[in-house]
Image (tube, rainbow, N blue to C red; front, side, top):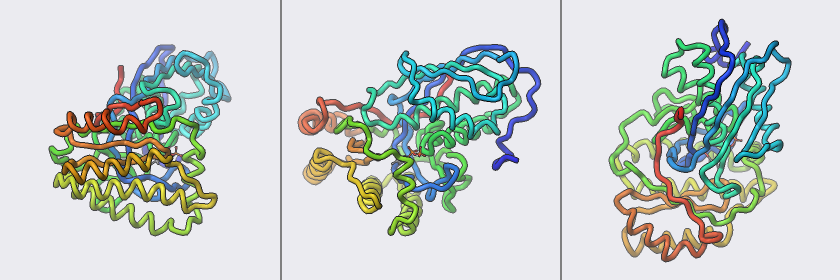
Amino acid sequence: MTDYPEFASSVISELPEKGVISCSSPSNIALIKYWGKRPIQLPENASISFTLDSCKTTTDLSYRKRDVEGDDFDFELFFEGKPKPDFKPKIESFFERIYQYLPFLKNYAFTIHTTNTFPHSSGIASSASGMSALAYCLMQLEKRINPDISEAEFIQKSSFLARLGSGSACRSIEGPVTVWGEHSDIVGSSDAFAIPFPSPIHPNFENYQDTILLIDKGEKQVSSTVGHNLMHGHPFASKRFEQASGNISLLKEILTSGDLDAFIEVVESEALTLHAMMMTSLPYFILMKPNTLSVIQEIWEYRNTTGSKICFTLDAGANVHILYPDSEKKQVLEFITNKLVAYCQNGQYICDKIGLGAKLL
Ligand code: DP6
């Protein structure tokens, strides 16, 4: 019995012999953060993110039908052209989780080639783009096997499968703004998959920019899975989940009204709360670096003196995402190159913007 029978595959008749499928899928940046989950990969609160455009993973999935169906999964994995054995256990457990929804997985030998557009070990989460790209490739194969699947089912199941690889990955299948997690104010929302933000988004957010300052490219001290688990028994957990839920309602209004001052307040508060949760868990940890705080101070000063609508958000690391309207692009890039680059490791930063999600190449 599957947990979500609506995502079970129909009976397989004929399986294609072999082929290659190439897809790309972007990373995303959460505005309302997902931090805390229950088994299996279900969020404790709803989250909302901007899907990114140029920070993405490209995955080529080669498949060859095995002579007889195996008892195990048969796959090889290459990252930027080289075998990557340390990624294999994560993919293996992803396959275990999704096998009940894609029963053809054991009928094939797969070779997976994957590359990222952003620099290796830049501290940018690659699980969202990587897992969504792989889920999307596998769904393309599912579609070859079961061509009757509707576009809506295809997209929803892609997000559902991506979630089982990494929670935030389910928010990367579509864009420009997606919501994951059931919430009474968001029609059609679900814990099982993400949906596009269901109301029209104000033109203020069109082409919204995200410049990612690479403050520290070191290995993460804490994996996000460990971090999520530290919310179990966390002294502030239930208040935090309540707060996130209230922030979803606020952001819903803001995205439709285009109120950028209110946007700044919710987004920056969410970023700092995420890090406050880390600082107040047991064990406690601090992922921000001195330069993260310096950048935040500079942003606040710039905003006070210029009236700009720029703001920051953070993921589970030291890097700073700077969000701003397209109309301010020129001035903000000047501010970044004049002031903020000095705080970046090797002067590195990445210019990205809101994007549309996974694609078949
Ligand atoms: C801080 O999706 O990476 O970026 O589900 O364990 O794979 P797993 O975690 P992951 O967590 C993302 C946490 C975050 C906030 C967010 O993206 O909402």
